[in-house]
Length: 135
Image (cartoon, rainbow, N blue to C red; front, side):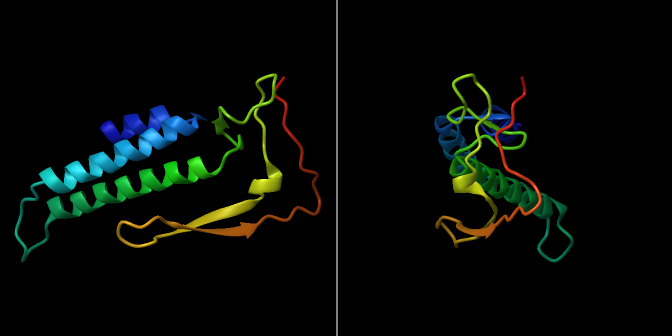
């Protein structure tokens, strides 16, 4: 429940720099708590569903942290996500195509090392990019 609350509050539709940084800290603390306090039952020589579920939970921690890192890196309002620091004076979502016109793919950087960002440029030939207005 705590992980879902963190993601909803800090990495949901509206995102802020400080909130994303706080979310990353909270997720890392949850992961540390899990490693410290988890007690996995079952036997080593048979199917161990408790161990399998614990592994899936660790996957959720990793994914949540990476989602927050990616959202922190992308300092623009785009798609269904609104970055509070990236808006017009009228409060409209503001894109930054000059900085973020690419698809991001993140590579695991290793234990206790940051992920590595890979970028694939987006090239639009038949449409014109422009700011959206919802007024």
